[in-house]
Length: 314
Image 1 (cartoon, helix red, strand yellow):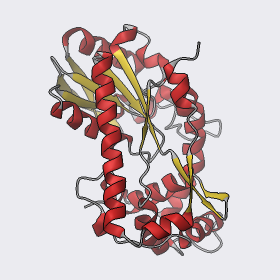
Image 2: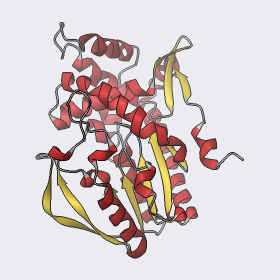
Image 3: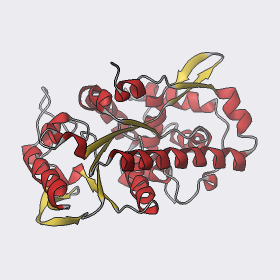
């Protein structure tokens, strides 16, 4: 018998013709409002599904720049509106100290590997949350890439804990828990774009644009640094995230069709940000050329509480 999770996972992605996106962009306010309301409905459905399951723990994952962090908080807000306390815990708090990270074959740090996390500490925290609704978790400092002294206390008694991170669906993290205590969500873009009937802007390219804009605006990363990390990020997704997609109870679609048009001006500004002789120059130019096909809309269309603010800012 096909499980509910298997049925959900193989829903094909939507393929939308870019000319239709540009046509919709001629009514920008209505276009943006429709896309935003669609996302809100998806989160509300996810909250209803979590409550129906009776689970105490939600494990929520998604690939880089899928919007999983903001979506986790949006889900917590939706649960609160429905009368159930929701709190978010990031798996990032469980990173080991930098010197203890696993290494790639060439000696570089493997940031995407599940072994970068303290799995035993995750087990202890999850078991405590299921049994008592409380746990003390590590406090990780990303600037130093070291754990701070002390811990962070989580009190979710009578509520639901949403644990978000790239390894959230890895069975190694939840194998110690009673099966019905966990509900699993995979957050990802389910919409791709075509031109003259041929796919030309896949979800991975949309996420790369999101990440480049976010990294340069909020993380102080150059475009070249983001592009240089991207192959390892994608390889890590294929190895550590997408392989567990069929474990999900629900797919949460984090696509916003009008986003292409809002991202377009930001992507255009990045053209030339990489030296012409850089190995990443062709990659950047290819991405910019794709966004040249998109109508441009102002970021002011994005509501202040939109998930997209995670990448573009307020």
